[in-house]
Amino acid sequence: MGNFLHRVFMNSINHKRGTTLKCVYDPEIEAEGRCSLCNVPLCKTCNTEAELNNDLCHACTRQGKIARLYQIIRLSSCGLGLAWVVVAMIIFNNVQFINRILYGAYGLIGAIFINFLMAFILTRMMISDLKPHQRVFVGLSRYAATGNKMFFDQAIRSMKKVEDMSPYRDALFDQIVSILILQPYDLPMDWVNYLCEIFQLTEEELLSGIIEFGTDVFEENIFNQYYYQAMEPYIEVLKLTERDDLYNKLMDEIMKILDTVNLSELTKPPVYTISGQAAPQQQRKDPKEIRDSAFLTELKLIDSELEEFLVRVKRQKDYKKIKEIIDDFQLPAVPKNTFEAVKQIAAGGQAAKTQQAAPKQQIQGDLIALPEQVVDDADEIKKRCAECGQFFTKEELQTYEYNKVKLKVCANCLKILEKEGHREPKLYSDLF
Image (tube, rainbow, N blue to C red):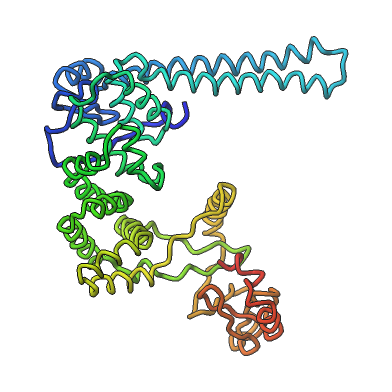
């Protein structure tokens, strides 16, 4: 069932407002509990019903039933597909073998199509039995948690069937704030006008509602739950509402985090390896390093936004400090596509398997010492040219800098590289 039925999700938005949260099934009533699976807020009545169903809300209980049904359908369709392959091989015995294979493949294709179709239909059935106003808030909540646009579309269609949404204003802004925190990159660039049109609000109503219901929630989730991606939409709201007081408060918290960032750990050079040899065993990263990396990545993405505000309010020193840090910080490398990501994962796994069997390497400055088996003379340690791959003595190699990394190449290859526009050496990807 895609991203939903085969995955336990948690709507981990944390609120400081406690009981002011509204139940997603009865959005005019304050919540007193939560579903143990999807974590949505529940009123006393809905929470009592959940307790009778293993602490699961109505939609999660229905999710379990639909998941079991889907398993039956999936196994049945796969069985029928395989049965058709066998039947096709028997009844089409008077045609060429390749055609019999093709006829049999139609059964497998049909089974795959049925699986996708049923997954689509059953996912839509997840909240289809609820009342329109319930589908609105359950759908929005599940979209915020999973990013599945189907729930969002169901919620918007259901909202058109609700005659008066005014009694549910608080619950609506609870969900809008959750979407801005958890799914900011799924929204269009002009998300303010988009949400105004979708929820039939004026810009003033939308922004004032987000400030009223979301200020504490944004701060809690950005600085205590590490949803740093929420800084961008929050800053846009603060700019549009001209809330410099809240913007300054946000910047104060940002500066506090910067004081704790260990930039030297985040800017360590990559470990150098040679093709055919396992990389040195990597230690698991500290969770704080991962959070700091995500934090600096987000600051780098909103650099111009921060500069505009800090210069205007005469906090240039703070911006200078931010600029110095993010300029030294390199954005994490992102694979170009899924295939590239799989290659990196596979390469990492292979390196881990051969780690113990591989001879140890020793990094000396910007030079890479080869295994002992390759060293012919202790006084003349041989090195490998990063372009042609041949081995030379230390004196025969020259330093060549590419992508801020110093490599060793022979004199002939150095001339070639500089002549061809200071390009990437042929063995660059093998060495790193």
